Length: 449
Ligand code: UD1
Ligand code: MG
Image (cartoon, protein in one colour):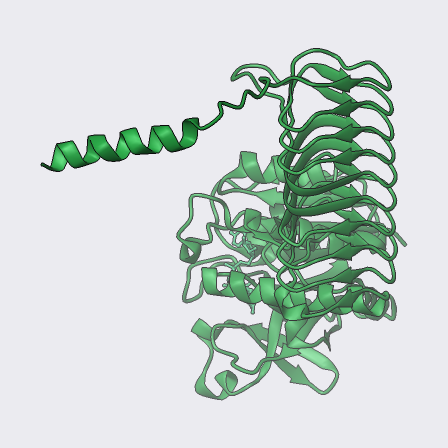
């Protein structure tokens, strides 16, 4: 049977105190909303509907960039979760199957949990709610159970003291037949403490119609929602703990795991060693048996097997390092390819360049790629040797097996196998150092006297 997703993402997120809609705040380098979409992707939903409201344009753009098949609809006034679900109705026209309601600010619900909900639905329960045992039930809605049956959900604001003592709480995730869900949501009223249309009221409505409701549970860590900056930091910590554990389980050594930061799409192959204090932003792939030493910052780059990076290296978007490349301390690489075995070990900037296999880039080399307006490319062939402190003024090409002398300012192409010397010639003046010092000291003594 087909599944449709309805992701509620219209809320204000007042407590974030942010100009950015809450669901666009990032964890592991991607918006919360995209984590919610990722969690449900393994269910292979036939339709995905995102309900946007506050900051709708930005939310819609993020949803489409992540899931081009997603339909976005607007809830212009945030009248409550049932009202938000109803806004998805036009996108479910002609759809037959189950609908799963998720929240855009709840990033960690695992696909296995959603699959268990769908299984419970298909076992004959009309409405299946995801609950959890809350350590601090606080503001969460409470699940009122009668045996296996979920009788109703009561919001904390509307609950009696007895109901408030229930620790089984509502995660907000609901699964029901799509048409039934819409009928029930349309029947919800707003006669409650908040004057909102509560989606949670569909449970009592379903029971009144003789439709069976039940709850399944998952660990509280999965249902964690983000409402404040402190929650966001907590969610980041949960994400990082999971990502580090996944990397280590896949055969990656993290010397000091709690100091390594990964992204939602980080891919690291087995036997790679990551030292302490390494930050890996989005879009990074690292091959087998590579070594990333302490204090590196990587984003949007590909690192080949056996490469050695750092300590203190910065790889920026478009850095493509082939097998066995060495990039050492205080080296920045952007939009540049380094061929197999190429080395740039110290104090270097490589931007908009291609470096051939086996080429050695000396300390202090800079590709001067930007004239203040335009960017230009530097091309260096294979097995070349770039002398220390070479300035490569792009656009420029250095050939295969060519060399540049230390301190060269290269403004013209260097042919294959040529040595380019491009610096002032040295002149030695015999005895001048001593005579000059005497003159300077005498001048200083005169000034004081
Ligand atoms: C909701 C549940 C509560 C549950 C809690 C779990 C209801 C009535 N209550 O409460 O039982 O324990 O989540 O976190 O459902 N949204 C819209 N439009 C609206 C209102 C909300 O899109 O008009 C979206 C929000 O952006 C958010 C989600 O729905 O993603 C939940 O809304 P929120 O206001 O946070 O509900 P809670 O009060 O936390
Ligand atoms: Mg909430």
